[in-house]
Length: 240
Ligand code: CA
Image (cartoon, rainbow, N blue to C red; front, top):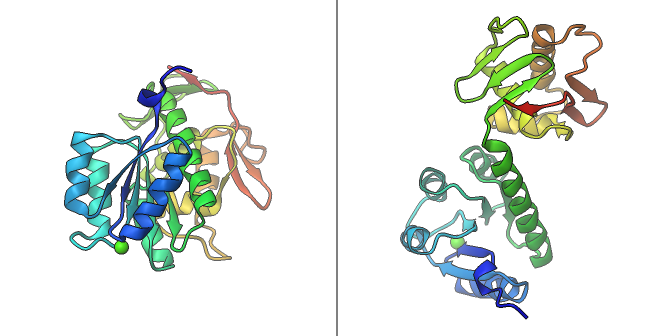
């Protein structure tokens, strides 16, 4: 057997409750991960530069640092995926954490198998998004989109005037092409809140975007609705 030690996925567990950290570490090591533990925010910052991990599992309730500040620090100084762990089952904490750039969350007490599934899913997603991130310039149906410059031009090279919200919505849809994205996910991502049963914000924005982009807004082909589920970007997308 080849030595696979160097290929192990490195997990950094930021957790001040020693028993939880130990249980998580033991479980993930048995699953083939290499695990480091940081018991506070200071240790996290040190380990981040000394042994850069592939994924951080971050307890929001740290003794020496506000969990949101820790999330922000990770986002600003390190580009990898973050799963936040909340002690309280408060939706607001999760939403704020996701808004600050965490990729997913689990609430204590969590099931280790579920945590493993989340970790694998987030790692898969981040590997995919790294591949998709590189061009940041796309063409679809005659349009050219420059994500970083925030410019969309049509087939005649005319700039399409989008509001900032419409542009962000388009980017959110394009980031996961051919995948149905729920209203709730879009709302959380774009507005930092989850949808109430009668929340029409996303539907209204999609309607506006369609009127600007679709040849026939009544029969959309770029952004389709999936009844009861959400929206999906269905146009052929190519890097530019
Ligand atoms: Ca804690």
